[in-house]
Length: 562
View 1 (cartoon, one colour):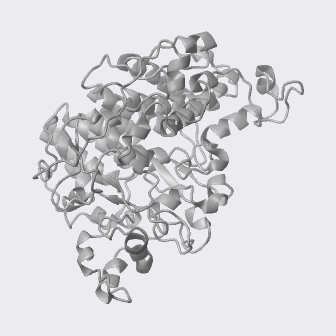
View 2: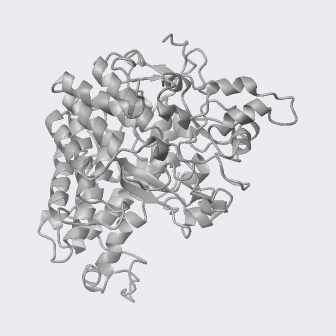
View 3: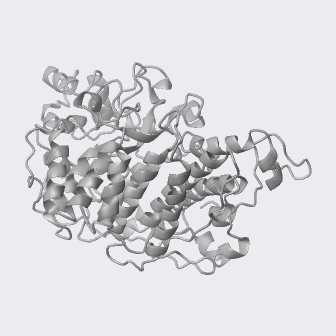
């Protein structure tokens, strides 16, 4: 583990910045608070840094070039492989620790330090902007700095909402008094950090919603240049997420509807585009991040420490974990098989039936198999090589949802200079449907059916009531959850939904494509989904109540019969 002091202490706004602006104190090589407030352009630089460092940087490992150290989208995979819907297969997959090696998620390991370091680093950036923006404890910002302060409030709320869901002792639905995470704001003192108890769910909700309320006012008239900076619709979208978790169905519905204004759902052509599929913003993207050709994650380590390296299969050069090093991420077979053929989203993953056409003794890929793979990609040989030759896995469930940058599949390393969605209008429509249905089920069913028919014209409500055995939620919520699992696959929602709905995990069943030795069936929320705090935080924060170490089932479970 990295031997560093408390990240929460580092997250305090002591304003000892380095490298952000040129005017520094020659005695200390740091920026004082007054200098940060007065330096020309400094505030705008700090605001740009809020989103500029969300991806593309080796924030944690520096020149160690850890493959997972590429920023916010890394947590999509980290959370998703903890469940069942995303399977990190192959011989060389950097995300398998979160899938199976739960002992390394205990307090004294680097994998546990990683999220704590990044999230509190981002929170520190927000606290800096709030401080030099004059908004300490929700004060009216300095004139001209309202937008930057609004962005800082938005992102701080987003980070804390992520963290409370990852670290909470129990889901809100199970225990509203469960402890979540400590709070560090722009006015927290060093002494406060050393005696900083974890917020309860209600305390966390109050804090996060206060940030979002402030952001909503400050960004009400802000017109952004692109989706890489949050605006008021993103604030409303985060509010919809928070109220959904809080089971405040009326407000979840209200804000999900407000957030949708001005956006339209992806069409089939956009969803399945071989040039722009989930690599470029479109009319459904509300918020996103993008890799740049100057990012360290792209220009260093052969670009192998990037989202493209671990998610894209079609590049034509000898780099990348998904394509060439044997580390693709695939869809759970049972989930895939519950998707009707009439649902065009099924085309985002290679059909398991093509496995039967593999001929290990042939010198060339069989013609019928090549034709089958051509239905998914302009580069069928590369898909075959990624799954069969390089990963020693096979073909079933390989993902082509996320594509290389248009026209750049053969360009090193521009193929991986792609955007990644953080919020789409489709999520808002599913929140609206669920929240409406929890008030009046018939309204929710109507909204859900309207949504589902845009993906599958033959959809009939009730199709997926048995797709998951856990009866902790109603048939209606199970139907919404199934749509979320398919629509938002790989976008970081799997663990959050499992915990929110008090679901379990099923990896062992007849025909499972989960890795042998990791085929665990757990009827409730697995304890490895309750993240541990790094041991340095407990050492520096006397009031921190720690979470138990995660445990790994001793053996594969008996096969579940669907």
